[in-house]
Length: 103
Image (cartoon, rainbow, N blue to C red; front, side, top):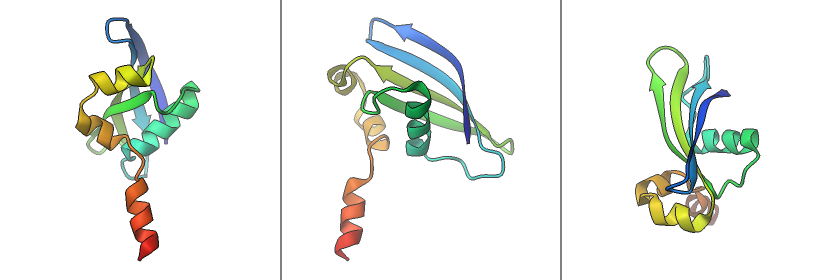
């Protein structure tokens, strides 16, 4: 999977940088939000607690997807502005792993 950043737009009103990107994954399944987030964090060299991947929209039959992510200045602003369902998709699955270990 490769990530090609198309544009980064500063949004001072919301204290964030908005990132539009292409995700290329020829011959693979559509990548999960967390996989895309981890790749973006590594590519941009930023704190993963400040980055939120909003959407990854695949193009049918092409092996690529358009994506949108937001990089906040602080965790306080991120929690204040982002909706709960978006934060939920970007969380690591800690509870599920601990339940599997108990079984």
